[in-house]
Length: 128
Image (tube, rainbow, N blue to C red; front, side):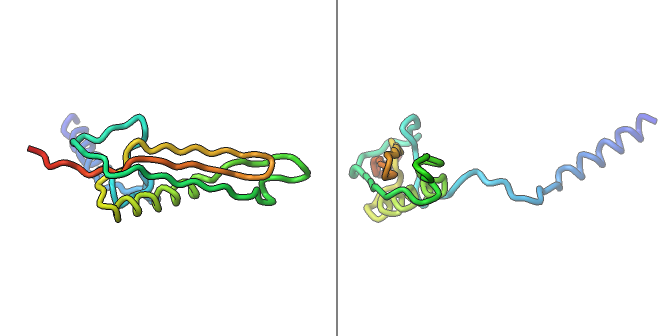
């Protein structure tokens, strides 16, 4: 009887090892260089190449403001990821290996949405 329990247990373990979820699990967007937010640090030594900044103000659209009431504010997560993707490409063109101290701030007034995305483009130093 004990032999059958071990055999069944081994069979179940081997079946679960082959399991793949039907929906792929995403870990977030992939960028061409490393991205570290303001509370994170690269694990390698680096030198700062340049400060990076992107800012813009856009008028509110109809879905955000209706009958004088604010229905939604700021950018969507997809908009934010697109802005960060553009900044990483700009940093990569400048020779950077990573973008550090990334900060994203948005604001909404009665008439506009605004944002400020900033960070530092850095080049990793060779490791000894």
